[in-house]
Length: 249
Image (cartoon, rainbow, N blue to C red):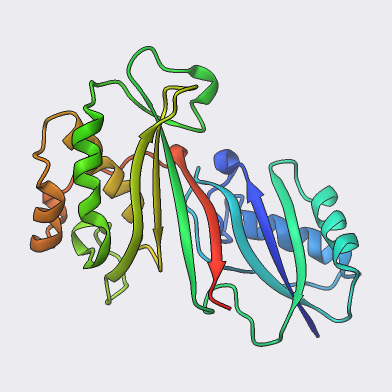
């Protein structure tokens, strides 16, 4: 068997998430359907670097899969790209060693989150940016978001019911800027891993700080208390993008 690594992008609007679902459409299922056609009807298992939730998008999701023979990587990429649904794009394919694993090899992830702030909202972007119709102070948000950088226990920013026991993660970048052309806010987070709904919970908290309903020190309070009830609401998934995954090797 020959192992391949693929970088893919997708519009998450019509997907129930990346991971295969019993009754709903998923990115993994669609890729496996295409690979089955390219592999003479034999099933192919796709392994993703991480899961994205319903409605969440990706520029740079990474997957790996095995095929029984070597392929020209550009022909394989072209075949995957053209035979997959239009809301999936296969950006790149490369042959990798047999011990490469998209999920378990050490890597960092970068997420972006777009917020359409103020009124009225842009209806053309309703699936691609989360609308927040309330006044926001960018300076206080930029001050508060710095407290997320570093190695912390992110229990207070994790969705309740998560089965992951170790909630310590390292964030190397956490910023929020306003795009001068669109007026949208762009949140950027880079880290060695993110917990279930962690990015959306962090965004929801920073937005509430920007609206003056939480103090600038609230990030520190949530981290120290590990209390989810002290953080802001979970921001909607339509503004979230898995931007890039970089492997250490």
